[in-house]
Image (cartoon, rainbow, N blue to C red):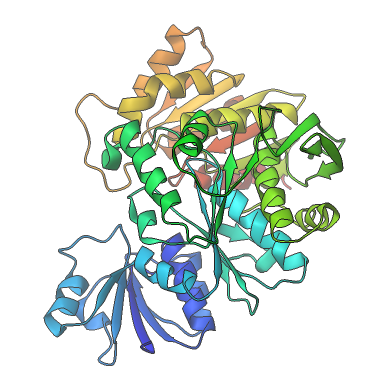
Length: 462
């Protein structure tokens, strides 16, 4: 394998993780991105040559392979230069596929929860002494706050991102599917195509492999009936033939989720996480089902999961000021927004003030009614304008669609904010002690939570 790799779009969460692993394996890494950030700075500190801005001259003379992000277009100047030089050019997923081929690989796929579930599995293996390689789409405190770790053990745990279909380039030894839902319709067009893609993903498992499947998901059940492979199943509720399920779900005095775990009718014991939410108990069940299948006992799984404190932008506590807790979450699909609001509701006795930034015009256009239903569960809601994520505007599509739909559903305490400044002014004026302020979205909305904390601390003199 070549020793000099150049990454175009190296600052992306998936690209930076792979670059990080390659650095740990002894490769020389260079790369570029449109702007500096936490990931680019971390890579530079580890020895990567990272340039800000795209330029043909960024590709070193000794580069032997070029890797590019799915966000990078074919007319990118560095792509054009790599083609001119005749360099091999690979997609991010192709490089991930190479890494996965070197280990017993665990590919965690699904519409919701794959970052948290892969992080839970990685943390569990780490604290059970198996020293896994971990590649995830979020920052993980258990591995020093990064999004990747090169381990010496046999296992590699990685997210299998279905958003653009490139997860089909992966051939994991073990597949985990958390759920299947209608999303990324800009790529798939319809749910039937999404089901077909996940079906192909499962069929690519090797003969000796197995899949951990959420039997509480109707589409997962449908695929299991069609594809005869080795399954380990889990569900939040006892269902016909399910292997793992829970009873007595709740939260402890610190707001941490807990439940009794059952395996084929037998209670294995109590699971206590350090994060809230019924959906996170589901993610942990997937980790336990996987862990026990590879030979860990229940006590080891629970002990490993007790070290999991969450990942960046997944119900992450940004801070507290003037009696207000500020939580940031990556939720950007109606099901994720609903689950996150439910988790927030379970751990606060005060008002729940939710701010949601829609992500992409196409998703807003197809799902604004479902978003309106989800955000209506908050006491107070602010909807900021759409974060486009490189999409061109669609005439008639704006965040006001969600606001108008929610009002028609009877949610009157909902406001529209055209920009961050307008949203911040509203929050400074309206949020009061005892509230939980929940910031949600896959764009740049996290900055609103950070700015709120800074401004309130200045006001209060903290």
